[in-house]
Length: 224
Length: 333
Image (cartoon, rainbow over all chains, first blue to last red; front, side, top):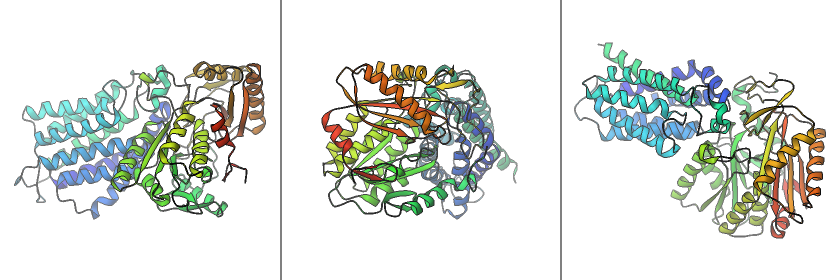
């Protein structure tokens, strides 16, 4: 992943949040307070607007800057959680950069294994802050299987696009698996057994983020 | 759904401009940081109180900014907690050097953002303490949930801690009394209709004409269960049973009672509810030493009511009765 790819990923997330805003809000109104779509859209729209003026020179810096902006714009629980995820991810990616592995736009780039390590740091950030585990019906139920699939593919020699595609598939599977779960974190937890039967909005936005990575990495691979 | 708004994206900014225009003698609004402060800066050495949370709960919190209550409030987007930068701006705007108490309602987003704000404030050399309000007995098994929600009890906490700060007490004492009030307060709410968030444009859940949601929070989220609508007497008896099972009261106890409208219920019905609460407490020999009946912690246009009961000692009662002058609460001045 180079700086251009990191920027393209974040722009793709912003486009996905724009497209799926109503769907996320609809999912959130079933078990939460009907603001997840509006919040994610507001956050990534702000990031997309700020990035062209931003002078972040590494992929890690782009993603860390994204996290900081999310924290300062989104609010609610998603702001700190996604903000920490991207900040941790970006910081870890900067630390793992491969000098000289320059992308098409120059600068530094990270290989699939470095990206796997950074995603792991992002997930650890979310776990620490949200004190949630798999099975709690949260974004972690999409994030954790996505990371596992990404890492397994990367270790098997897949390139970034292949690993990201595997991660996106796993995230979507994890997202669908939240439907029969009973929520134990966030506002949905107050519903008790009544939260069963509804797909988690946070897991859904996480799946959108991984699908955006897969699409962006595939497009970059096809580009000359 | 019909709303008196310009467009969903500008509701908060338009409302902030409105509260500033309506109460220039009481409030000042920083529209850039979205912070509401007292019109007159707090005196030197006064511990300041800062609260905030999602919008849609008016008059909470901006309506409680003023003498004897909050020094600043930071309203987030509708039902969404404010962001750490906003909370930090609020604390800085009113800082006197004596420290700031963050009054935080127990919702995941509010807790996380206020924690981050407290870290940022400490880095900037500000003295900050926090009190977590979690008075809602509709949430019982906190092992399996995000813990009890903070609802109507917030008004008691802000009023009583605000009065102590106004007297010049140090931060540790103000934080301590806020914690005592929270520990002494229990609340329970029922909804007759769902509310409609401007950005969503339609009600959060569908409720048949003859049914109510029991144990709702203040964000339009569904409650713990659904029941048939019954006479107010029976519904109040159930609500009070839940409150008293969690925080038993005995004859001779003094309490504060708030019968709070969720935004879409007329005062006529709130008085019907208050009558039942008063009769029930009188029957147990519990004295109501102070009360509020009205819309204080709303959930947009949701019809329904919450009942909050706070057991008070003489010192808490004196602080409750101390002068307060805010847009939504005023006595003794």
